[in-house]
Length: 156
Image (cartoon, rainbow, N blue to C red; front, top):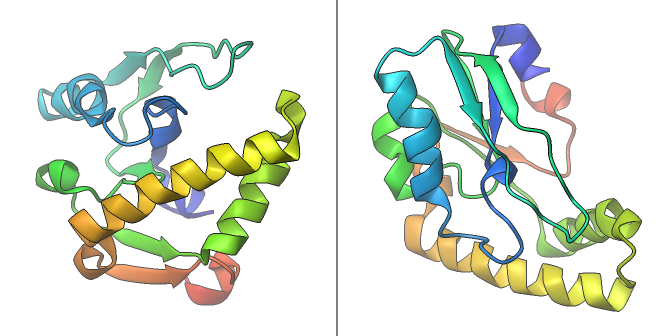
């Protein structure tokens, strides 16, 4: 909805992160997205990361660089990205809700709920370390509640 309203392209942090690298993938995004945009490219090309053994994501090819670009995902407000950001939105969601949503989304991978729970708990620990380190909710210009629909919180 936000991207559509702003006629913005979206860069997903999940295209750079992975289960085996949940936090320290950021240099690839800076090199592949932020620096080319800063240097005036009209389109972006990059290979999204592989999340699962049988996950072979298609490359991003010729993604337009629009006047407004949205960086979406966990750690999008990390300190290393802030020189490239104009506006920050933090979506706060309780851990139990994130865990439930993540497990539900990832059931199709063939992993058991126990395996997924373990993976997600490790992910959540890394996310909490990021929040402690970078304090994204304090940096953000807008703070939203991840349990309330976006349209109920923001009016255009």
